[in-house]
Every structure is written in C-alpha cells, then in structure tokens.
Image (cartoon, rainbow, N blue to C red; front, side, top):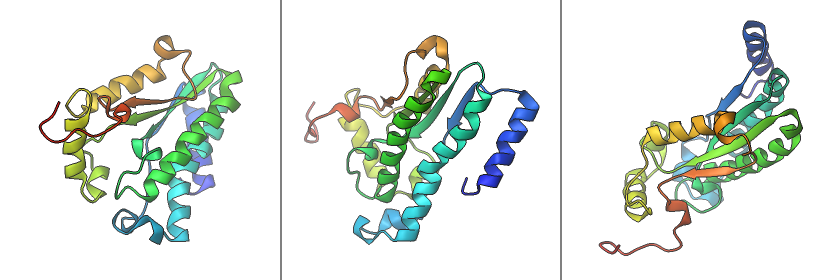
Length: 199
C-alpha cells in the first residue's frame, strides 16, 4: 500500500479480469509496535508518516483507482474505531490515523458521490483480533467495554460483518454515504462510566 506502482498493477489486474468493480473494502492499518507502548508525545516523525500512509492515505490511493472501475456505481467501506474521536489509552498514533481516515471518508464521499459511489466507515467496538493483541492492556479494555456498553456485552465479529455487508449492498443502504457508523453495542454513546456493579 505504500507503493503506487503496486496499487496500479493491482487495479489494472482487477479491471482486466472483471471489467468493473462493485465494492471495495479497505481493511488495513499499521503503526509500529512502539507507538502503542510509548507515550503519544514521543511519536517520531517517521512513525507518523508510515502510520498515516498505510492507515489513511491508502484509502485515498485505492479509491482513486477503484472509482473508475465502478461504472455502474459502487460502495467503498473502511474500518475505523472510536479512538478516532476519543482518547483510548495506548492506541495513540493509530487513533490519530483513524481520525484522518474518517475525515478522508467524508471528503471522498463528496468527490465521488456524483458518480454513484458511496463511501462509509464502520467503527467496530473492541474485538479479539490479531491486531488487537498489539495494544497494551487490550484485555482490560475489552472487558470494560463490554461491561459499560448499552447492551452490557461485547460485539460479535459476525455482527460487524453483517452490518458491513449492509453498508456495501445498495439495496439496503443506498442513501448512506460519508458516514461513520458504529457497531459497538452502544459503547460510543455512553456519556459517563458506571462504577463496577452498577447498572
């Protein structure tokens, strides 16, 4: 994702094989492991550039090449997280990259809407994934999010997948674009934390 020539080759191959494209799912992000462990104020310039390039600019780079293949309209979906708008300890640089990603969704949606292409972000709650293991204290965060959410549980990966499909399928969400939609059991809308044992 950091090499435009590689991205060009990928979309040229897609165009040659399929002729057109209906959907693009952007599900990648990266920041060096040390950025999850050190204080945010110690973020180094090279780490910033890399995280922004892979985690946010890659959406712009792939959308630029995907949209011309969406001759009959289409949908672009990316994955975000609540740390784009709120501080999540240890998420650090990745939270800032997710904020850039969500802003990019809105600008892309504006640019490509006239061509019948929708662009949205799905902000999932904490889920036990390989990437989540790199975040210091994830186990505690996962447990607390489930306890504090409106549904008093954590999300299931199937719920994220099902809603992602709904955002991609125009018949189900044809009028939705430029949005960040939460699948987090209502955690993002909680205004204050409940003390343990209280509901």
